[in-house]
Amino acid sequence: MSRPKFNPNELKSTGAFYPKGGVDFSGMEIPPEPIRNKPISPRENWKLLLEGKKPYWIPISGFFMSDSVQFRPRIHPDNIANHQVMDGGPPFDFSNLGNVIEGLNGLMWHWVEDVKGATMQPGKPVVPDINRWEEFISFPDLDGWDWDSLEKDNIEYLGTNKMNQLGIQCGLWERLMAMMDVVEACIAMYEDDQKIGVHRFFDTYADWIIDYIRRVADRVRIDSVTIHEDWAHERAPFFSPDIAREMILPHQKRIIDYVHSRGMLYDIHCCGACQMLVPVFIESGADFWGGQTALNDLRSYAKQYKDTNFIFGVPSPEIEPEESEEVVRAAVKKWVDDYKNCRVAVGGMRPMAQMGKQFHPMINDAIYEYSRIAYQDEE
Image 1 (cartoon, rainbow, N blue to C red):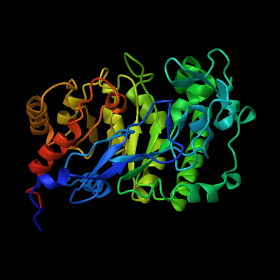
Image 2 (cartoon, one colour):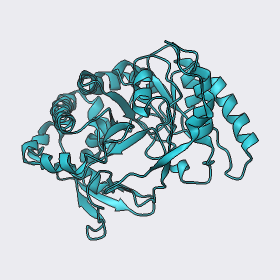
Image 3 (cartoon, one colour):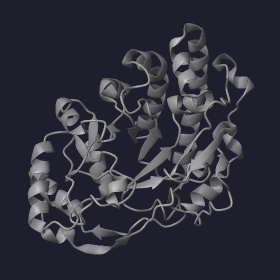
Image 4 (cartoon, rainbow, N blue to C red):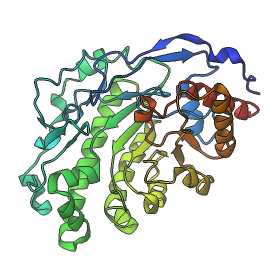
């Protein structure tokens, strides 16, 4: 059955979307977003792309002004420690918590207001010996968490037609770094006498993550999972692709396989210069990655790997907000023509730009229109 041809009425506003509840993304103000009269829901459109089909339009990823709803519930202490509570509960007050907040495993996160982020205090590793990690940290029993409140508070928040994405603040490698300090964590990944301890920790943590995802998804609708795993720094990865395959992939693949068994998309959130690691991302079975545009040529990656099942978050054209409609349309049309035969979403760590100087108010609608036309003859 042919798709309906694009109709300009699809861009008419039928209301405004604003994340209701305790939405706080590092103290940033979140703008309202118009709801458009599209032929299928953003959630259904994402599913088409995930299934290897042409979507109705190129979806927009990101924390806000996108085709997804970010869900980082206050039930998980890392979301509070990182000032990223995004759920349907009442507004969350961080003012009385101070700058040092306890997260999962008893890790004490230091909030740095200037950069709107949290970090561990260097030089004071919580786990000095990975082979004895059980002596220094433990994982909470999830039976004791208030799952009834999570379900009740998020009926409306997760009841939109967007893709609901569960965010987990600290993945396997990031938690190893947080527990041991970066240098010691890197050494532990390479030294034979520490690898057994690393595997034992990753295996236990992967089990815990899977149980957490299961409990959340049993209570509310989750369509996608993203886990923060910064495998690289500004210049290169923290470890080689072969070490990633040996040490992380067996455990990460278990998590990804579980996510897929629930019919959900897996978004690998990985910062840093990751060019060498892209093949490892693909091997892991992950579905999507939108990295930092300043450090990764996502545009070329999308073309290089267009015949895989992997989806890249490619940055949209950067257009000054005062530019004319003609300029916007010309830039977006070229962008869509460049990527319409690739597996892409709009991405590239775009959330900050959505509320900053680089984000033109017409660009989302223009991307929708031109990609909708590009895909309208698909069956």
